[in-house]
Image (cartoon, rainbow, N blue to C red; front, top):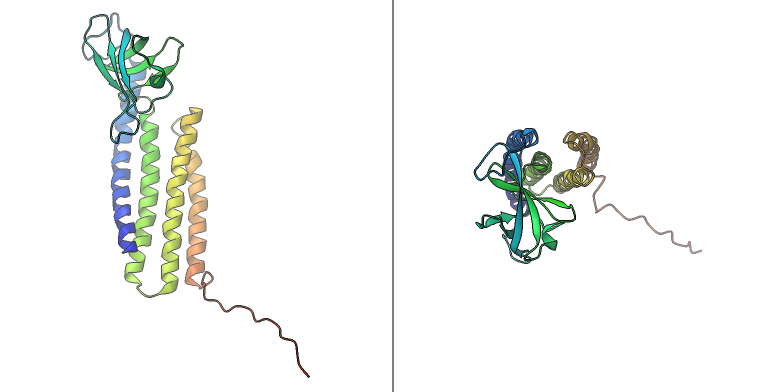
Length: 244
C-alpha cells in the first residue's frame, strides 16, 4: 500500500510538473510583452497593449485568512465610480495595509490591474501581474518532475521485488532523495525570488545541487543492494573474563 501511495504521488507531481513546464514559454512571452508595452496616452478603459496608471479608492479589502481556496481580494473604485475587483496571491506588502477610503494607484495593462502602489511607494503585483510567472513555472516544473521521477521509480521498485529487503531499502533511498531534489528546487526558487535574480539563476543553482543529490542517491542505493545498510548485522561480542 505504501508503494502504491508513492506511485500516486509521483503521477500527480509529474502531471503538475509537465503542465508547469509547458507554461514557461507562454509566461515568458507575456512578461516580455508587458515590459515592452508603451505608456498609454490616457487611462485605458478597455483591454489594451499599453500600460496606464489610474488612481483608485479602496472600498474594501478582505484578507480571506483561514478560508481555503480564497485569495486575498480588494474592491477598488476609480473616479468613474465603477468598482474593480482585484485579487492577490499574498497579502504583503500592500494588501495587508489597505484600509477603506485609502488612495492607491493601479497599473492597468490588457484590461486588468496588474500592480498596486500605495502612498508610501510600496508595490505589489495582483494575481494578473505577469512579472515573475516564468520563474515560478520553471521552479515548479523542476521540483515536481525531479520528485515525480524518483518517487515513481522508488514506488514501482518494491512492487517488482516483493520480500527482498535490500531492494526495499534501495527503493526507500531513491524515494527520499527524490523528496530532497524537489525541496532543493523549491528552496532555489525562493532564493531567486528573494534576491530578484534572473531566470537562468534557477537551473544554474539547482543543477549542481541536483547532481550532488543524484550521486548521493546512487551511492546509497548501491550500498543498500550490497547490504551495507542492513539493520540485522550481528552485534559485536562482549569480551568475557576467563575463569581458571
